Length: 333
Length: 242
Image 1: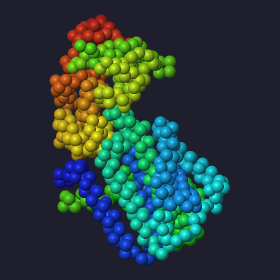
Image 2 (image 1 turned 90 degrees about the vertical axis):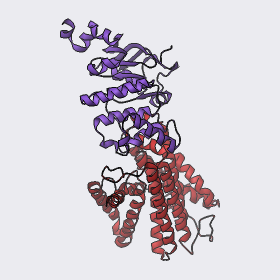
Image 3 (image 1 turned 90 degrees about the horizontal axis):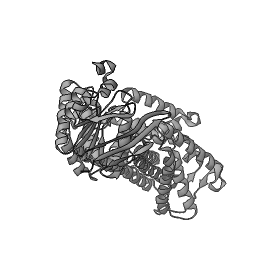
Image 4 (image 1 turned 120 degrees about the vertical axis):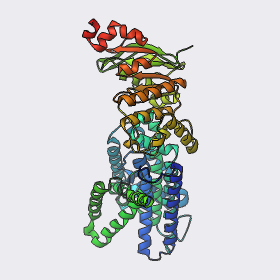
């Protein structure tokens, strides 16, 4: 795009619009394709992949655009999942609980960021890891939220209000499409807005950003707010989908890694990266789970490890840079 | 006319080491003031204090009549003071245009007017042909220029230039001098730290000489080159005697 050898680069505004159109087209294709999926195994794969696309896109706002690496996003996911489940058990409609879940997740991310964003280096990553682990242990021993055995929501009939469906997976697919598409649209809009540029300036050089009047601490908190809220929303949707939460499935540190991984593999700080990364991660994870059975524990992590090494060696900018390379070749040819 | 920038009795110590002791001087609007002194004289600390990166222990700094002491870099930038860095700091993953855009967004909330303002600044600084190049791919001279362009996007009244012309080829330095003269002609006030005397002295109206954290002397370039204390501090005993 900004290569001197390519034909005249499209203006920044035009490139932004084209990227938006391509993303919109991608989600439209998924909608059309998803409507035709009747096999529940494939539908489930698509639903989980879309969930992780939205989660990774949320993580990317903070970790990719703003450069604040979080290793504790399972905390926000778990808070969203638990809050939605507890609300459901109290007969509060899921659609009403989801905004509250997003709010709680955003607030938690801001609370952690308030003291820790003042520190530089790896302190933020370590702090998020430790805090998320502490809350995981708390939930593991807290009877009111079911402790280690978790909470279960029984089926009480089809309902859009509660996002409860048994006959077809398509409504869930629709919800996850809206979720992943919505967060992607937000990231797209912000990528060409003042906040998006403030984030990238802070990521590249905080001192230089401050010298241009960027409120460094403030924009980091805004990134945390949106990232935490998006992740908690995903947690709430997941809870509505599986109707069961326990600390191991919605708050374990392994989940924090799975949320960050698609963005890292696909391309940190890009719009396509989290989508491509989720499309790689989820099938690999499902494959290792279904084919390796119980003995497959950790097999997917080994695959990711190998993938990340390969990507770091051959495509340091992530898998999304393959797309950019193809496009450039297309233009010069 | 009131001074644009007033530095009054500013002191700063790091641990037990006094970096600045009771530094006072002022800057008139439209003036180019040079700040010189041997290594360790406190130039960078003084720069940091004015730009808000360092909080002075004592003393006041007033800008356009307003007390800005210890305000912090972000608010001082918004008050109208732009700066460049001694060690070049560009947003390496962003293009040249986007680097400037970060500054332009302070004055324009929306992308379109911010883009137009950024292009205007790139034109003024001779970087318009390089707008889509990643900042990481620029030559050192272009990076210096980009730092000036970025600061200009704030529409500052005062520009702090930290060794902008250091380490350039004679030709590049000449172009830099022409740019700074043009900026002054547009009404901008400049405070610059520079090591290369042949470049600095013809450019500035007055010079502040710092030595060991204190103001040694303030005067026109003609005055300070004759001042024996400056010669001793800056060029060593041999020159002062000779």
